[in-house]
Length: 277
Image 1: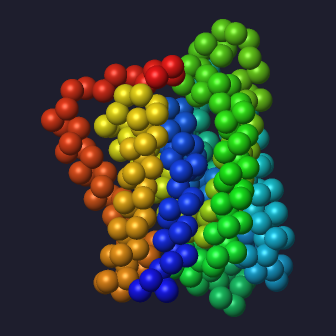
Image 2: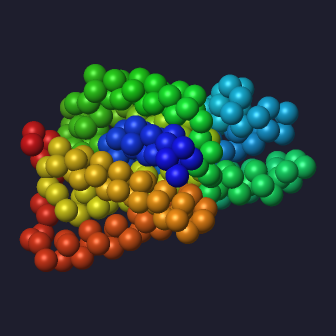
């Protein structure tokens, strides 16, 4: 088991920390499905690369996926208005559906289209290589450093948005900056894990953390713990039951979310997060 699961386990240990942090931003912004939409956009760009003869692991496939994702970042930053008759979630949902449909159309021209569609959606983290894990980790560290440098700016725009407007910040620019870095992370991780697992890693640990903790540091710690349990636990279930790894991890996250919700029922209501906590 150890020989087979070493690098998948390493991926589940080394990579989720940044996903949890980004997930907390997504939850606070109230744009829950932006991660799955951007993951699908990344998949669409990778599908273009596959149709042109590049392997999904090829650099050109990543560049194409990132290009589509950055286009999505521009769209979402422009549609994030303070008041609008069209909710941004509607734009996000439309983007996801159109990207998914376009990916299916493209892969219908591929000899292995059905298999590629399945891989893009569910993924198979058990076949991840050492090189893929380290490449992903390096990208995550680089994006993490950017977010650390501009942490006050990102936190203000996400957690105190009206204050950012009051200070006359260029909120759309900071939105694009956030979505662009978010897209870089999603694009490289979707090649490893698939769309469903990207969504689960970004949202489920963050939701559990928000349910159980008040301060942002505490939410990060809880989210990291949930992501570690969900990833390693899902891999174990996958190995012991001979189940698809992506689906097993997603279902394990679902079980952890139920447990977190039950714990929250017997605890006092959680107050809004404090930025200075």
